[in-house]
Every structure is written in C-alpha cells, then in structure tokens.
Image 1: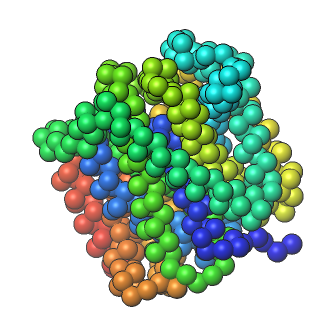
Image 2 (image 1 turned 30 degrees about the horizontal axis):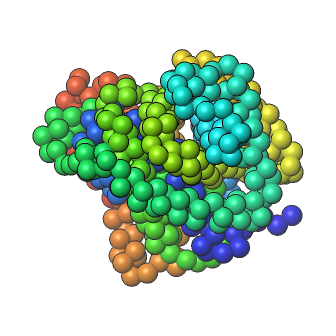
Image 3 (image 1 turned 30 degrees about the vertical axis):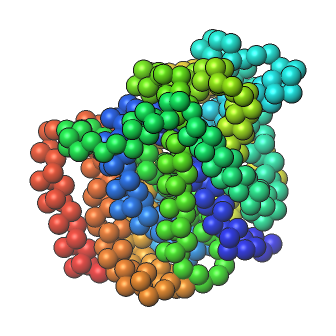
Length: 466
Ligand code: TYR
C-alpha cells in the first residue's frame, strides 16, 4: 500500500497549526504564566519560541520529510542503527502520556460545550450557578471518565479516516472556525468593563521582574514553548513525513510558529478581560488545572449574553483541543502502520483502548493527573526534542542541510548553516540545562558560566566533527 500524503500545501500548514494551537494556548498558557510571574514569563517565553521553537520545529520537519516515516522508523532508517530505532520508542510512550492527560481536559471542555449549548437552547441546567462546585463534578469520578472517553472517540474517528480525509479535511474546517470565533470573542471582550485593566496586566513589560525571575521561569517557559509548538513527541516529524513536495520547510515552519503565537496572544485577549470584568485578577483565581474553568464560568454567569459567549468560547476550545489530540494519536498509530503494517483501523482501535485506560487513571486521580500534565510531559518533551536535534546535527549532518535547503528560498538557505549549528550544538546544551533547572540543579552548577562553557565546547566540537 502506498503511504498517504497531504493533498495540498495549505492542508499541511493547517494540520500543523491545528496541532500547535490547542489547550496549550488557551488553557495551559494562562495558568503557567500566572504561576511563573505573568508578563515576565511572556517575555522569556516569546524569546524561546523564536530562538528554540522555530529551529526545533525545522529539525523535526527535516527528519520527517527526509525519511517519510514516523519517528521510530525515521530514526532507524536514516541512521541504520537499532539504538536510534529503540530510542524512537520513547516517542510512542511520550505520545501516549500526552494524550492520556490531554483527552481528560478535552473531556471537561467537551462537557462545558455540551452543557452551554443545552443551556443556550433553553433545555439544560444552568451550570453557571455555582462554578466551583460544577467544575468539581466535571473533573471527578465517572463523569470525567465518560467525557474523556467521548473526547477520545471523536479524536479516533478523525484519525481513523486517514491523513487526507480525516486530519487534513478536519483541520481545514476546524482551524478557520477557531480563528474567526476567537477574533470575534476578543473584539467582544474588548468592550467589557475590565478590558483596560486586563490589557494592562497582560501586556505590560516589567523588566525588573524578568531579571529577578529569569532562572525560575526558564524551565517552565521552555516547557510551555515546546508544548505549544507540539515539539518533542514527534507530531511534527510525523506530519512532515506526509509532505511529498519540495517546498520551503523554513517558510512553512515560521508561518506555523507565528500563527500559533498569534492565537496564544489572542486567547489572552479573550481570557483576561473576561476574568477582569468580574474583578478577579488571574493571581486571585489561584492556579492549577481548574482555576481557569472556575474563573471563566463565573464570568459567563454574570455577563449579559453569557450563555452565548460561553457556547462560542467552549466551541473554540473544543475544536482547538481536537485538532491537537488527533496529532498526538497519529504518532503511535503511524508507528504501528509504518513499522508493522498494521491496518489503520486496527491501530486506532488498539491505541485508543490503551489510552482509554491510561486516561481514565488520570481522570480519576488528581495527583497522577497533576504529575503527568505538569512535570512528566515537560520532561519527556524536552528530552524528546533534545534527542531529535542531536540526531539532526550529529547523525544527519549534511543530509539535514540538503533537506533544509530543498525548496528553500535565499534567506532560508543563507540561514541553513547557522541553523545546523544551533540544532547540533547550542539547542541541545540549552535543553539539557533547562531539564536540569526542572530538577533544581541550577544553583549548584553556577548556572550561566557552565552553560556558556558547555555551549562553546559543543560548538567547537561540532565544527571539528562536521
Ligand atoms: N500543541 C498542543 C497544544 O498547545 C499540544 C501538543 C503537544 C500537541 C505535543 C501535539 C504534541 O505532539 O495544545
């Protein structure tokens, strides 16, 4: 059987944007930012998106398009080494960890969407009445398991339909809807009473805080940047493996990262005015998984037309989450299809059943959920991207340059050699050190001198070898 490819260029870009834009932009970003110093976080985060995210994204693209295989097969076939092939299994595990917690949150959101729609139609219970209590019910017990499975089933149906008729067609419908609704919501949010305060909170640049908090926010900022760009699990390797044209990966990658960042900023322009219109600043809602749900539902309950706004908002989040969860499920599915010739149907059913169970564990146990969503995923994605980049720099080398340049314009071609140094030497050093900060190592190591020395050494060694 011939391997599927994207039907159109815009199809690939929208699928990748669909993967990138998700709960990471709308749900995770506000509370990670609130936990890590607000706008200080935003500044560090934007820098990391440009300097680490985009080059990293291109690293994954180069592997995927070169190999036309999903991550495990790609690493083995490009290197000819079973050790790399075995490391490739890491990505299958990462993808399963990701979708296990992601489809739980997806389930909560689906429930909010369903109940807002019912309330809009005048038939549902008014779930806004006590937002805290309502969220407690949504996020616990069999209710949470049921909606997790439902969300997973929706994801599976799209993946089942294949690359063109499922993922490409689905994201071609979902992404424009997300963009239009989100812009509409942002405009509406701008008319609310709290908007000016919200913008002041969200967009102010506080240089002192950046300086004081730099070390503390580095790890979470890097984690968030990788998460939001869908890096480190192999989604972008897999999606690029369905690209069959010579077009500029650098152009596509930059477009995808910019669109994703724009949606993140836009989501803040919706979320923060809503919270502020109630007079709650994000710091006060507390942080953690549920804060945003409780805060927003509280806002919806008090605003004129709140049910309508709630329905539109949760529609956006549901679509954004779905277009991301399909890109997670596609990783293990493509692995089984590519490496073992398993039929797509069987692969989806098999992986889906596993995630139904692992996700239910997350849904039922808040401690496990918190560990997976907060710590484990950051560690796995950081380690995963490091693996890909070391591979691009040290194993692919010249081939990576060729692949990067194939279809690229003048600017991208000129940047290709610096890019290879970045992915082969600088970024792995950076990522390893952010991993260490996650484990609280920075103070002991004398952080920056060590990073600088290690980076310089890596560049010299890399230049010598290449
Ligand atoms: N980028 C997605 C979001 O922001 C999450 C995601 C992470 C999707 C890793 C895929 C992936 O491989 O919601």
